[in-house]
Every structure is written in C-alpha cells, then in structure tokens.
Image 1 (cartoon, rainbow, N blue to C red):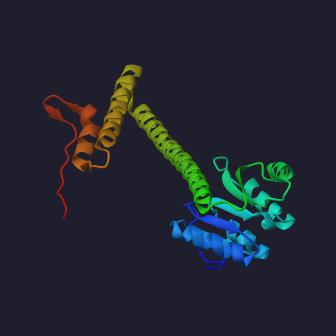
Image 2 (cartoon, rainbow, N blue to C red):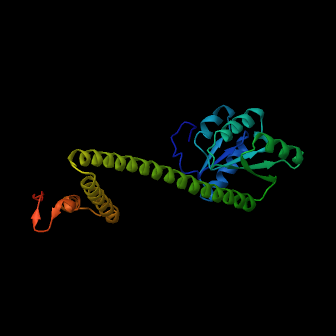
Image 3 (cartoon, rainbow, N blue to C red):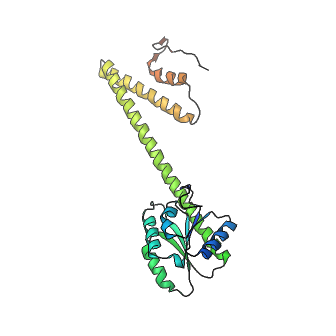
Length: 241
C-alpha cells in the first residue's frame, strides 16, 4: 500500500509505523498484522506528510526515526489537530540512549501527544498491549468527536427551525393585523393562530419518524376558525397512490 492510496479519515483505528530501517519496519508490520491491527509503514521521510494526512490512530516510531524532518512533520500534524484529538505516540528507544533527554525533547516538540516509551528490546506482548491501550484511548477520542459533530449538527438544525418558526409568527402577525378591526379581535385571532401553530408543531414532534397526514395538519391549522354548528372552512381531498 502506497502513501497515496485512499483511506477513511474518520476511523482513527490504524497504526502508522515510522521506521527508516527495513528490518524494523517489516518486523513491526508483521507483528501488528498478526494481531489484526491495521498498519501502515513509512520508511521514506519524504512520504511522511502523505501518511500523516491519513489521520493515523496511533504513531509508532523507532529511535532512528526521530530525525529533525520527522520531528517537524509530526509536530505540524499535531498542531493541526482539532481540540478533541490527542494522538498517542509510542517511541521505541535504544538501551544506550539518553532517555531523559529524549523524553524531555519530545515533550517539548510534541506537546499535544500522549507519549509512551519502551526500551528495546521490548517483548511483543508488552508492545502490543501498549499499542492496543493507546488505540482504545484514541477510539474514546473518536466518540468525543462524533458527539461534538452531532451537537453541532443539532444546533444548526435548531437554528434553522427557530428561524422558520419566527418567520411564520411574523407572517401570522401581519395577516392578523390586516384583518382585525379592534385590539381585542386582533388578540383573540392572533392567539388562536399561534395555538394552531403550536398544535401542528406538537403533532410533528410527537410523530417522531412516523408520518403525519395532511388532513390532520389541516384540521389542527383551521381549528381556531371553526365555530360550533358552523364550518367556516371546508376541506377535502383524495389519497393518491
């Protein structure tokens, strides 16, 4: 799979391995595949931007991959994350490295990342356990993202509906005002029309995903204008197939 292959940006369930040495890259890829973990491997630093654009769920980097170019590309990706996102990064450090210095530097350049460090050699069980835990944390972030997106969608829908209702009320006011001869007549008529609008809204709301018949909407709308023994509005129709 090349860096330019399409991928679903919404899942956040794949691991991206940054390993400049083919031996390390092949070993890590095989390990993750054996445990049914979707994985991409980036060996060429020139392709890292394309791989990061896929929005990996977890980043696994060998010590040799911590070059200035990779540090900068990952830092840019982290800086562009939305507020709900905190990408986990698993770093495989050499035993002979100055681990305190490396941790301090990565905390500085990658502040918006949940960093986990392992000293090589690390057992497969330990590494897989750490990556799976990181992926679970990432999936919880995805749930937060979905909740935020749903809330935004609902707010937009609410704003649209409120605007429609206010436009209807303004129209009702103008029509009632034109036909009223006294303030009392205007108040009674306007109140009746608002009550009809409220009943229609309630009928649609309580119907949820069920259909509401046109005849029911018509009856609710014209109810204020029907007097006992006298029908000022007559409706009819035929149900079409």
